[in-house]
Image (tube, rainbow, N blue to C red; front, side, top):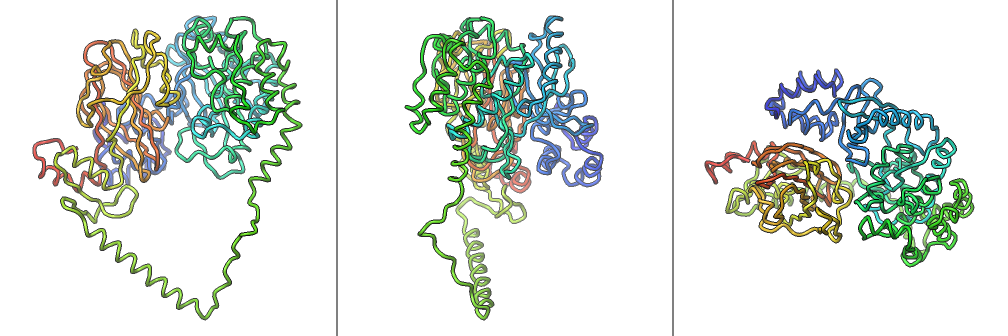
Length: 624
């Protein structure tokens, strides 16, 4: 059940051991008195980087048990893949970050599958190549199993292309060459990659770059030029747990790797390393073109196209592509294995001669070049004039500050300033903006103080299947990409596309059956918004039935529960970033009602100062 006191939150922190002893002492001796409200205390711990937003949300929901797995403390949920749920975690004794995967129960339902799983993990752990993600640990958990591997502080190539577009050609070549080195090392030791695609190729943060790259997308994404010195890390290498998924793909089902699967792999034939090289050719095409060779078709059509069709020439998409690299990609994409490179080592030998020169040229182009029109710096100011100029500058600053204070005092009708409370960004005064209704006043006050309101257009896509309550765990296309222009196969393999959600209002229960007239279904809801500054926004949510929440690709809530919808069943703190944001919700329904609820809530400083004003203007209603 949700945590209702700060003391209860402190007890959960002690139980989970997510904080150090000194941090727990600071919470007990200092913060508990300053923040008696558990949500305010959790927000302070997030701001201090003692907790992640995911940990804070789980603790406030009373789900502390989800945050500890053996010796590992869960930091955040990274998503799902063919193997199961994936988390960022820390080994609490060794203080080592790992990527933790909890394997789907159905993949290890037979004793022989479990035995094979541990054999594969052990074999993969013997690999010692810098471009391969290293497995650390594996073991049972409940009715399933987990494995922990090296955490890569970076971004996968799928998300990199989705967020920044096609890559610089030299950068793409470097990434393919590094991947080939990893595949050669694994192949020589008897291991193949059974799910080679961009999502399984991670770019680690360049060691010489100060630009931060985060899987949680907490910082701006660097350009491909900044990433050129990053190291590729190949994940999930050698795991045949993915084979059932490949069989479903060959039968015509939806599969995320249908874009990158070799013809012989789609036909269920025996595989060797040349199948990995075909997949690598598809990835090379994707990095350069910004889309897969046969994008836009259903999985079954893509599998047939891999066997019979030729993709659109890359030179039509990237005319600057050197002929040498165009030939390399064509050879990788040959339909017959014997027409491709016969080993990854052959590929690296082809890439190396031209690649070094191109990287050197690109590096030189990235350096600033003196221009004939460069303006020379002004001559130094004589010492005799420095103090009068400094005094004039101080006077000018004071005049500007006085003008700003005068402008802030000149507020419109219905707006009230509070000089004791700061705005989200820590500047200016908190402002109360009375409107015609209570709901409009809440939203207008948020907007006046620099917070997003979540008002405006909302979109939906669906239905996707939820047979036997499997929709919650299923990963449908909106969790992998958000493109309002695309359509996807939905429930019953019928095409579904994003549409504007009609008649939706914040703060009211919305019946999804207005737009989707089916039971046992899954729907995704999307709101895109711009924020003037980074902030933390608390949102009250309700759903009938399950509810999952992502902000900018980071999952903040995953609640597998069957219930009727009601306001504020779940409270989630959104770590809003300055600029563009994407809020994605997923609601799975069985039968009967199908509703959801969204309402942003005032932060504590607005609630403290303006709750009485709101009650005065709109009496006999809940404050938030």
